[in-house]
Amino acid sequence: MQITINGEQRSLEQQTVLQLLQSLEIDPRRVAVELNMEILPKTEYETAPLADGDRIEIVHFVGGG
Image 1 (cartoon, rainbow, N blue to C red):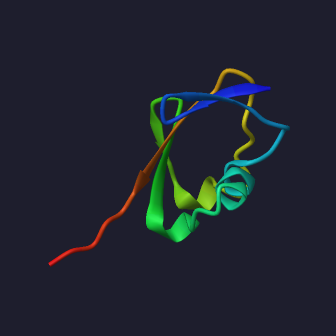
Image 2 (cartoon, rainbow, N blue to C red):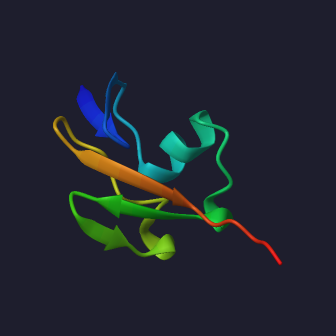
């Protein structure tokens, strides 16, 4: 299937948002995920399936002082 991650087209196998984050080596506790222009609650990462044509935006939290 084809999805767009942060503006970049990618071909992926069927998977959940959590599986995608893990495959990208992204800690799900440190990001916010927007799926098709809606913020996805962290509690749904494990069960939310990705589908062909989905648009994902992954926003990393950055600490500073």
